[in-house]
Image (cartoon, rainbow, N blue to C red):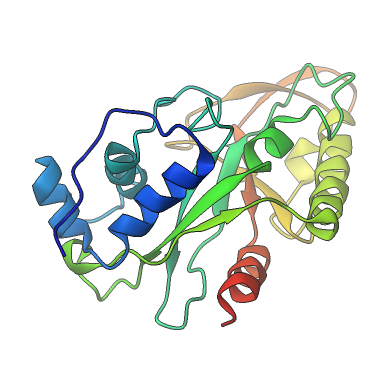
Length: 228
């Protein structure tokens, strides 16, 4: 089986995107990087987004780092998910940066989280640390949209977390809040600060936060679709 060629052409539809992703299944990150002329980092500690960037080269993503879906023309977000040998996710999945100010009138329906999760192309990748990055293989992709139950779970968590942000309790939110969605600091280092609302309604400076899907949620999602 020959390695597919990188492409700059955005996919015409979701099915085309899924077929492109399927054509990468079984290849190693090293094989794809070599074909694309990209250098493999020694590890992902400082290059967290490298695997996603490599796959975008083959899938024709156009959004780059813009705050929209990776494939805005067809409304699909790309999420790579590191898994162990049993197919279980090894880490939480970043969704988007959380807005800590200017949240009046925002609803779940109009939220950035929901927009990002409307349609997701999940690509599992071997992620166990003992496997060298270059020899980690790409798994079978999954094109997913939340069903009614998943949408409701996400909505409830989002509303609970947003209520706490609006009420000035952002500093008291921990990773334990939320059943399927959590809010965690999202910053390159502890010096990064952004504006938020304090308990008395006053402006405060705090660490930027991001919304993450918990491993239990993505584990169930993968298990249901791949019958693990």
